Each structure stands twice: as structure tokens, then as C-alpha cells.
Length: 230
Ligand SMILES: [Zn+2]
Image 1 (tube, rainbow, N blue to C red):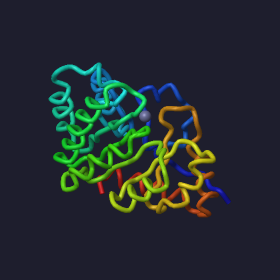
Image 2: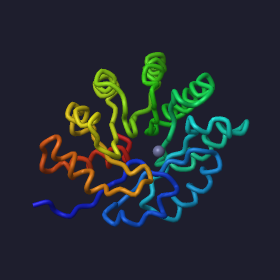
Image 3: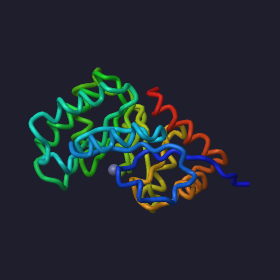
């Protein structure tokens, strides 16, 4: 029997409050992606103990940052050890890859210094991200989550085997079904990315793919470990 459970949404955004279908979601990790979202999210998190915030400059919004974005982000992160870093990363289809890499590196280093989990966005740029990781192997954050993973099987294996990365999904399709099968169960996470989708349905589908009856409690425990920073 499939029992009713509570779930953790491992990646959402500040717009999530407009979505009220997630009645079985116990906690939500919300990423602020711009400086202007930082303040909004910190207020939201202070008013709701089920919100776990992450603060980052998203590669889509690097041109909107002020000169002291880094100072602001660091100051905010220092307010609470539970605050995480995200959504940060690289996107091949967005302009100014050099600046994207520069901003990404600074945030990765900051997460490592402050010992905080990071939530990664990557579209078509895993080679570049892996290059950054290689150069900074001793200074990587304690926990890294690849959100809405897309990439090859080889990349995926490198991420989980060499970097112990958590992999998060918000949909199942023909391409990622086979990828999900090769991820260790204790590295799987689910997310809405602030979309109107049912987390329980997503977990159910993953359970079918990996042929595991108690995948809901495994994924829940995985998300708890991320929240506890270990
Ligand atoms: Zn997102």
C-alpha cells in the first residue's frame, strides 16, 4: 500500500507561495536568485520555520548585480548557519560565460569557507563546472546538489562518484529515466522548482523506476541530511 507521507521540496523559489497544492510538503528549500530576492527570502524564512533558504546569484541574473553583491550575500549567510547557497552555476545559453564563471567561483568558495550546502544550476556547461571543481578540489562546499540534472551518464557518474553529489529532479522523461537508475538511492532528491507539480507523484514514479518500495522515506532522509549539512 502506498501510504500518505510528508515530503521535502528540495528546490523551489520565492514564487512558491502561490502554489497551494503541496499540502504534503513538510519543508521547502527556497533559492533566492537575485540581490532583490535576498531580502524577500530572508523575511519569508524568519516568518516560516518550514522554509530553508538559499541565497545565490543565478547565472541568468549576473548583469543585475550591484558592486557589493558579494558583501551582501556573505553578510546574509553569516546571519544563520542554516542558510545555504544557491541557486548558482553556469548556463551555456546565457551571455557572458566569463562573468558567469567568475561569479560562480566566488560563491562556491564562499560556501566552502562558511561550510554551507550549495544548489547548482547547470545547462550545457558541466565540463566547465567540473573544471572549476578540479581546480578547487580542497575547497569545495560540504554538500552539493545538482538541481534538475541534465547531462550525460558519464558526467552524472563523475558527480556522484567523485563529488558525492546529490541529484535532484522535478520531472521524469525518456532521457532521465535511465540516469535515475544509476544514481545511488541515498543521493536522490525531488523538487518542484516552484512549478505546480505533485511531489508525491514524482516520488512514486521514481520508486517505480528504481524498484524500491520505501523510496519516499529514503528521499526524505536524503533531504534531511542536506538540511543538516552532512
Ligand atoms: Zn530553480
